[in-house]
Each structure stands twice: as C-alpha cells, then as structure tokens.
Amino acid sequence: MESIRIADLSKAYRTADGEVLRVLDGISLSVPTGSFFSLLGPSGCGKSTLLNVVAGLTDADGGTVAIPDDDRLGFVFQEPRLLEWKTVEANLAFALDGTDIPNGEYDRRIEDVLTRVGLQNVRTEYPRSLSRGMQQRVAIARAFCIEPDVLLMDEPFASVDEITARELRADLLDLWRLNEVTVLFVTHDIQEAVTLSDVVAVLSPKPAAIDATVEIETPRPREPDDEATWRYYERILSLLDGTSRTSPEDRR
Image (cartoon, rainbow, N blue to C red; front, top):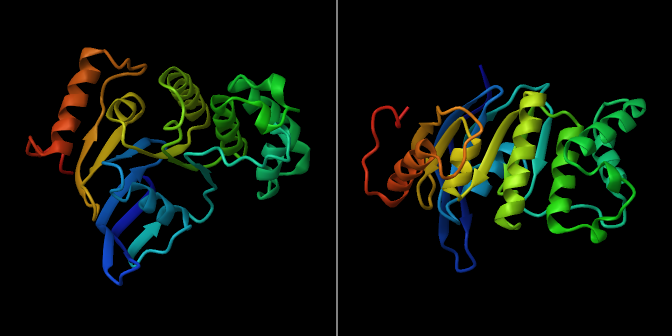
C-alpha cells in the first residue's frame, strides 16, 4: 500500500529573460506506507521543488500527487523556521493548534516528544538561546508532535556539523520506528541516504527525472564505514556520475 503516489509530474518556471526552465520532467514514483524513502540527486536538480509539490506548497504544471485524504502531513525544512518570540513548548503548541487534536493532549504530546529528542529541560527556552543542532531537534519534535502519517523532510541536517547530524539521524530513526510514519526525505548526501533509507530514488540533473531506485536491504543500524554501506555508496555514486548502467533491479 502506498502513502504517496506521484504520476508523470512536471514543473517549469519562466526566468527573468523569458526563457522556460524545466525543473521536473515526468516524475513517477510510489512511496510505500511506513517506509523511509529518500530522493537523492545533485544540488539544484529539483528535489526540493518535487517535495514542495507533494506538500501542496507549489503547483505542478502536469501530473498528479495522491495522498490519502485523512493522512496528516508534517514538514521539516532545511532551516528550523522556529517562531523566535515563542518558547520551545509554545512552538510545538502552535503546530498542534493547526490540527484537530484536543487541547488537553498538548502537554502529554509535547513532553513525550521533547523527551525523546533530549530537550525536555529546555521547554521554556527561546530558540535564540539554543544551538543550531538543538533548534533542528525542536523542528523535528514539532513535526512529530502532531503525529503525522506522512513526514516530508528537505535536507534537514545540511546546516549542522557531521557529529550533530549523526545524532539527529539516530533520533529521527527512533521517532520514525516509534510512530510508524511514512518519510519522504530529500538529500544530496549519499551516505545519509544509505544510512537512513529503505529506498533511494536517484534523480538526474535538471530537469529532474528518476534515473533509478535502489532498495537498501541491510539491517539497521548502519554505520558509514560498514562494508555493506560502502557498497551501496559506490553503487549510487556510479549512478549519479553516469559510470554505471542501471541494472534491472534498479529500474523498477
């Protein structure tokens, strides 16, 4: 069963000089319910545009996106996008205000998710007093506190150092397992995609099309220097740089 089904999606923009810039070119894919699915491709290829179309933030020129009507969507951006004038707990409560979740459940949800990301002691702090890594933890907590069915994530760890990113990835996987949420994750980092994902869709340079999909079949946790992880890394790198033809199992 799929949580997200995308069919023949296309998108183009008109540049300042009147030229038409094609960004997405006939994208079709299905994201299985409960899976961790990554979109991987070079910077500027159209990954974020595709995610924004799925979220309904950008209109497509053609094609369709189907998500079950009763599914609740969450979104984590590359920047935390926290409300600076609200405390950590108020930022999470603000997200809950946009749902049909009863007010009486707010405290329990906020306490639970902040504890799971190690921020239970900063509930009353303001974002400006937190490190970038802690701010991004708040952003992840904000997304999970609404208990989404589908979570869209746009390179959420690109602006933090690698040690912090590893910690955040571990937190994310714990929350994903616990909540059984479908994750559609954008990244240009091959190791990140292999470490996190069930499936990696490899996108071409702009206009983006799907060159291949690769199932990551090794058990978690996966370490970047594991032999199996490295084999997947090399396989996906060869797809990105065009040095390897896609195999039948890649082109599904």
